[in-house]
Length: 504
Image (cartoon, rainbow, N blue to C red; front, side, top):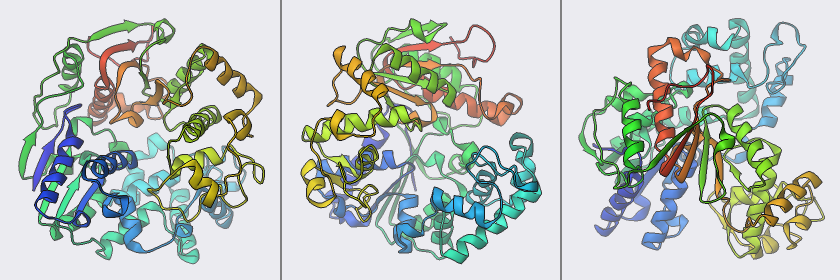
């Protein structure tokens, strides 16, 4: 087994693609090479690099997937068999409990089954970590304030509901893959972002590795920030094999590197590793308020530890009249803005990924701008890209008008905001130069300029200060935040309590 440790900006994905290139040049067929990334974004990036570099199609690389996607494809099930929000709502009624997604419920002893949902989260963590549910409950009941009777009832009821209707959730797919050994026989297996894998995903990797001739595990334990979601960091730290550390960062300037290394030294349980910053001093400045940071030029990544902080940044950017992208935001404002930018890209001749087409269609009016039955793009392949002409011909598109006419669900308020952005010189056909995100969602991202809020107020888990493990995890989170910038880093620290102690 080959272990590749890639500190921030050292080109871990590029090194993995060169590994693919090496085996292709040796005559290994592309469909015998597996590249499995933790997130769809990381997987898509790697797949596109390989397609462009080696002149391959998406169909030539059937095993460039996330592990969830691999399990799904190997099971041979349909999308209609995957649990959706609608299925969970139906299950709520079926179990005679309050809605999984409602803030309030009035259903007797089960009224706590609500928004989020904490019970679903605990059940999922128990399954992906291969840990008894009672053990997960005992370890988390203070944080989640869950009732064991309710948790046990929901767990039993959901199993029965899914079995009755032939449905699967994402954990079911992974467990089924392992228990029925659906792993394909590949010559080369590359696992990226391995520090974020859960116990059940590591079992999948083990099955793949047993059948492969060459195995490469790539990751960085210093960027392991998903333990709370079930990631088995200890499994990554315990790997044995030939270890290679990428020693040169092509992103991080010297000042940023010094700060980040002081921070990560708070973590005792890690691979000892050193790497060098790039040949630039960089710029670091502290602020009391984000309003003091000028963002009129250049590309920016605005980061917060909490969703609440990210929402505040979104409101501030809108007030400034700047176009932005809010990564993984659930707000209607960001969805509208994203759809506008995507639509104008489409009209400008660019192709859109399937998921982006869906985002555009959601802002269109049925029968007037998109045909009935096309909004969900049912039947389209997951990794497909579409031109304007493709959508007109085969996928129900009924308009080619500019955004303010084609996207009929946009409010007058949003139209006024976008209009003000255009008057200030913002361009719709280019990616917004400002991206807003939580630190967790930004892992793998970078920008010339980064604004990082150190405020931790509003964290769902306020007990991290009292746990040594969670202190280390928190250090890893802010380490990721500090290492996203290529030139300037602006840290916004609250005047009073609630800010994380980032080393100066």
